[in-house]
Length: 154
Image (tube, rainbow, N blue to C red; front, side):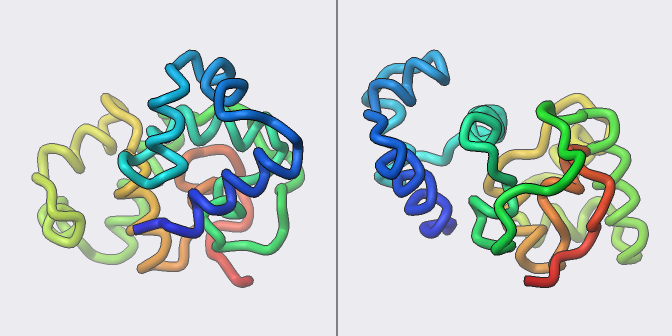
C-alpha cells in the first residue's frame, strides 16, 4: 500500500535520533504497536499520522511521498473534520460520483463514505491515500489542514 510512507516515517525518526519507544509515547500507544506501523503490519490511524507530521513539521502529502515540499505555509495543526467532510463531498460531486462509486473503488460501503461526508468519522489513512493518489488531490487539503493547493503537482 503506502510503503514509502512508512519508510519516510522511519527515516524521520532515525534522522532525529529518536526511538520507537519515544514515538509510541508521543502517540500514547505501546512501542510494539508503533513498531507494527513502521513494519507495515498495520495501518497508522490518520490522527496518529497527523500527530507525527506535526511533531516533525512535515505535511501529510510529504509523508505520502506526493510532494517534495516538506510543509505548506499556513498549515493547520489539527484535522478539520467539518472542512474534511465538506471537501470529500465536494470532491465526489465535482467528479460526478455517487457515494457508491468511491465505495466500490475503496472496497467499502457507501454508508462508510457517507460517515466521512457527514463528519461522523474522519477518513481512514488507507482511503485517504487511495483517493489522493488516484485523483492527484492533496491529503492536507482534503483533511482541512490547508486551503491551497487543492491539487498536487510535484
